[in-house]
Length: 604
Ligand code: NDP
Image (cartoon, rainbow, N blue to C red; front, side, top):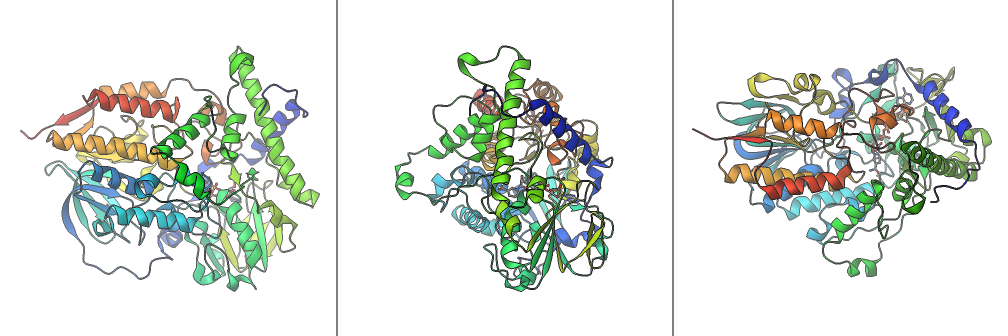
């Protein structure tokens, strides 16, 4: 994408429009507009529509070397990388009845990963698995997690359908008590928390939500018993049903086309339109696949991450909607590179606007009704909200059985009644409400994961965090010995989450293996190690890369803590120099071999 051509739009007018749209959506209650799915609403999260049967077993009391909390990709990668280092005395505890995590729970129709499958699906080389298409659907991804489970012999080492309720450090034993909803007490020397950054569904705090007399569920718990069919569609039981979908984020963009095909009528309630870029999925070319050389997956992932950080590369190996966006928001390179930061920011803003003009143009080219098309156009910078990619969504609005209802003026759906949804002064009678309302991203661990973590002297993790989170490299915190978290807090972020999880899993496996080999009783960061890391995190970063400064001008969403980009959000506060620099830093740290910043305590 060219960086310096004169725009064929008015940047000042667009800037003003972006600010207006942001203003229109800002709510004084910020993140509190959402409701936790607890108490009477817990069923939206805790009921498992996919478990073959309720689990009936005696509580387990056992001692293990490592407890891995979560059997999604991050937990599976932790298990794989620990196994490779010879640490096999671990127990995985998983809420679902199988592996998969996100891809166990998110089986809504059309669910698909927006990241290139050759980058996203972990351990492809180790398992010799060829993804069917460039963008894998949920079923294939779920099956891949099962494949990993079988390959590394993890099924026998997992408690399925078991929710961890608390982790409590026992100083006398030098072990964590991992307590579960089934009354288990797994006493673990080390704990790897692999709960996922966005795993717990959240609900919009719409008045009257409990009064609806029809059926309802969250996209992350699709009830095929009610709709019929499966994630490929075929929801024959919806043929005479009116369906409301609340929310228009990445999940809604994927499920609405399938609902439109199968339901009598779909009412889609939209507060902020998503940017919907091209998908262009294609089957894997077997010839290309067999031409790949060992190490190809890491190379591909690093190439993708380098482009995401705006670095120049010889070839864009992934070459898709994501990398197109990354190019649009990266600083110009080469001879025409602007000299000042202001000049550079202006050029980047223009290419960003150009990209969004392209997205808005795509709406105009596809949607026939002008009024509907205008409502579907996003007015914000491209990385303000999670971009989406789909070749069927916009087409839905040319169908007679799909109605788009704009709820931006009222900052959301007004009310839910016994019969349906009230918006725009009208009541829409429906049989089913689908909440496509996203997932908890609160930094409050208990809210985000449902787990209470009590460290040394009974200190609650969330009380510690409220004083200002301190970690070493984002993985571990003083006062919480032998506990390591895989995630996005104070480490570096990649759009390709699984490569990030894999690098973290390797690092944690290294520390656990070292602490074990050195016969340490406990390992945890020193104060000095944490302070040094905190200083690295406050180094300035460039705009448009997920930093707080850029996000403060964005339309509200979970990326910017619902418009308050400062303060608390697990997506903020990442290592500013990006995933490549972060991984290099960790590699150097491991090579030094002195576990700098960690304190090891030995049995006397
Ligand atoms: P999001 O949080 O992205 O979207 C929630 C939606 O609910 C928004 O459109 C929001 O509107 C809307 N909403 C919330 N409250 C109200 C209300 N009171 N009235 C009307 N609308 C409301 O959730 P998703 O599940 O769509 O996506 C979450 C994340 O999951 C994605 O961003 C992505 O990271 C991940 N995902 C990844 C996929 C992949 O390909 N790997 C596929 C699907 C999801 P508003 O925007 O105005 O706040």
